[in-house]
Structure formats: C-alpha cells, structure tokens
Length: 124
Image (cartoon, rainbow, N blue to C red; front, side, top):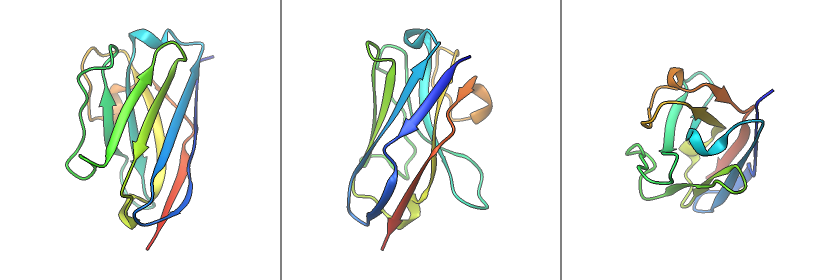
C-alpha cells in the first residue's frame, strides 16, 4: 500500500531551524500535489504549505510565510519542509499529505494519502 513516512522532527529552541522529510513509496509521486499540515493538541489540523506536482505553485498561510519552505525531489519521491525561526506556537505534530487534485488545497479533506506524523516541539 501507499506509504508516506515523515522524519526530522524533534525538540528545538525558539529561533532554531528544522528540516522535515517525507519519503513516499508505492505512489506515482510526480503526479501528486504535496502538502504539509500540523496539528496541536485540542486544535484542528492546519495547512502549513503546499506544492504543485512540478514544484511550482507553492502556497503558505500567513502564520508561516517567510519562515517555512516546502520543496520536492521527484527523483527521490520525497517532499521537504524547511522551517526557520521556529516559535513555540509551531509546536505540533506535522503530517505530509498527497493529493490528486491539480491545485494545492488548504483543506485536509482534499488529500488522498497521509503520513503518520512527526512531533516538533519548540521551547521558549
């Protein structure tokens, strides 16, 4: 079955950087729109970045724009999330998602496949 496996999370201090990776398998990676979401305890899943299948058409919410960068390597079937200038409010479980829509969507329901998540904790 399709697998998305996130890695790279951890405990960091405010202002630090982390790079998350999402390795995929059993998926025609190049035809999927990819995205990252996060979910903090007691909160809804939140979109933090999306990328079209050609590596263009990136979208970010205001909360992370200028600090987070999503990228993809179609040869490795992997999507990345570079997170800089981390803040305590960035603490959450981060999920990658793959969707068959041509356009990046901010809605979790538009994505077909999900990883299991990786914890990011930012201390003040």
